[in-house]
Image (cartoon, rainbow, N blue to C red; front, top):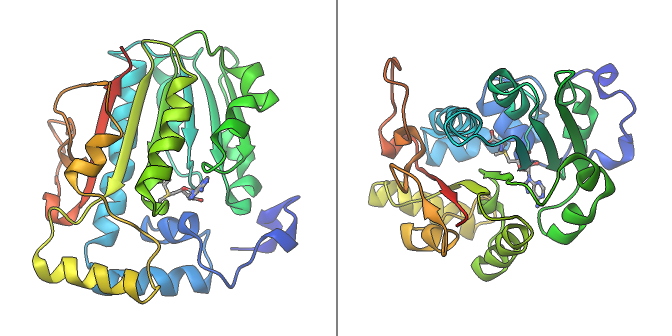
Length: 275
Ligand SMILES: C[S@@+](CC[C@H](N)C(=O)[O-])C[C@H]1O[C@@H](n2cnc3c(N)ncnc32)[C@H](O)[C@@H]1O
């Protein structure tokens, strides 16, 4: 990371000594937008879960396939992507606008470093629109009321809400469900929820115990959900095929070279429609 990359970033907001999920994920994906604290945490978590990098890539690929499905088969033209992550190739707007150039996307993330890279998220087609909000998922009403959101998305028309690899940073299930419900309540029938969330369900007892230990000792901030807890987020929604599966098993590309086994991509993924 070079300082010139940070542009107008308010440097005091960027605490490079503290691990941040966006930068650790960027490290696992092979990116360069991370600092020593993020790499140390990434390596430490990868010691207890050696497939962490494979899982990160499988999750990113799930996001892209889900956006392809939503913009294609489901005909969605508006996206609210919370927990954007640092821009990489094929961000939500790029995948969506390749299929539907008029697609409108609002991104939101709470990492100031994502803000510094927001211009990479704002490369909309002329027909469409992208906006970026520096906001926190834990304050969903602020996101919904944000003037840039209301100017960009028509909340009377269906919206695809993307919560991909973010809910597992909220430890409390009831609070997380409240947040998701608040967002869904603001969206009309025909909207979609796409979610992925880390799980221990596919892990060996040893790997699961390792994960518990990293949480117990404060080394991890990733709070897994079992299938039943993950399914709760979809109460009242129509889950599309193939249902709740490991992200690598959600509509994999038929010609994909390698499709990681669930134990190596231990993240649940699903897409569902609001009736
Ligand atoms: C693991 S990355 C996932 C990025 C992208 N959704 C994907 O799946 O490729 C998680 C992202 O969520 C963001 N994040 C974590 N907690 C958040 C919160 N409470 N509010 C907003 N963003 C948050 C992080 O900054 C990071 O960019």
